[in-house]
Length: 394
Ligand SMILES: *Cc1c(COP(=O)(O)O)cnc(C)c1O
Image 1 (cartoon, rainbow, N blue to C red):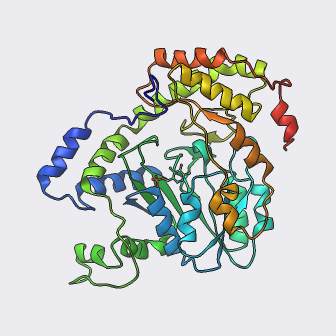
Image 2 (cartoon, rainbow, N blue to C red):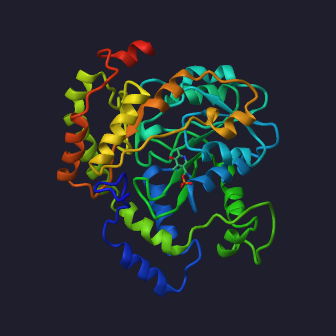
Image 3 (cartoon, protein in one colour):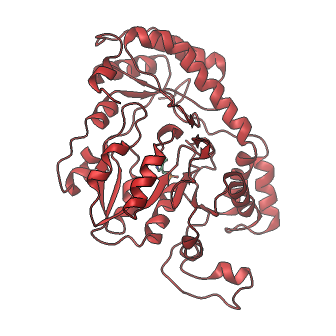
């Protein structure tokens, strides 16, 4: 079906084509040319991370993190079930067992209070996902991790340039991963980055990313020929992709402020309707400067969610759901060593509906979405604060 208002449209800010043709004319199209370098420098300077290595996807950045942590058969990794499959897969490829933790009812981020109970002597990493670019409770998570000497890898696919208590997301863990997939705030079709905050991973990360060779050192003149020194793979994006990404990163303030305007317009326009219908809109805790990556409605029931999805579809508007909880997916059920009881994850996953949000969405188009949504009346409205009474918290 062709939607009048799709869920997402990849956004171009202007100089992308020009930069692509510059990359083509330099004759250097493989990885780590000038555009890749410019993207890395920009990320390192703005975020003040020790190293930012561009990768072909966030999935690959997560795989690099698993390799760097020497994840082995039987190790355990703690993560939310409410996330994208790559958060788990990357570690499972090394033989790890994912241990799923429920999410907080306010942000749908991993519930930091439930983490410590899951730690065993096999736990090698905690992987918090900053859902929608709203920061997890990082001071608690960091103190649990350091108490047990476990590494944190932040899956920050949604949250580039967002902050938690004044500090950029992606700068709390030993490492963090970014996505530049076309559905994310900054995109080059397919792309990602591994951010490294802990010095001890930098040298090996460069080797793993370069097929297990010390080619980076060779280019810096630190060795006179490069050779095979470790395991590794090929995680470098082509200069063509980095050229697109550089245009996006240069316009980061403009891209973010357009998304912010649309996001806040949804919130403002739907607030009254939502509170009348008992529907929950995003809640941003104090101290979080988020990235305006998702705007969602938390409906009162699965039935309501399906009905609104169908109604929007009739208006030519695509609204989408996610995530199928990893613990209850086909794969998750096969591997789980225990049966999970993750009530918030299950509740949210049945009821969450994401509205179209992309930079070229005009206010007129957004008004169509808003009007359609506001014409919907909940069949399961048992009143305001239904969710909060279901999940009493704090
Ligand atoms: C999009 C996404 C990924 C994967 O990103 P790719 O760049 O497509 O590999 C991983 N984790 C989360 C939370 C995501 O939203």
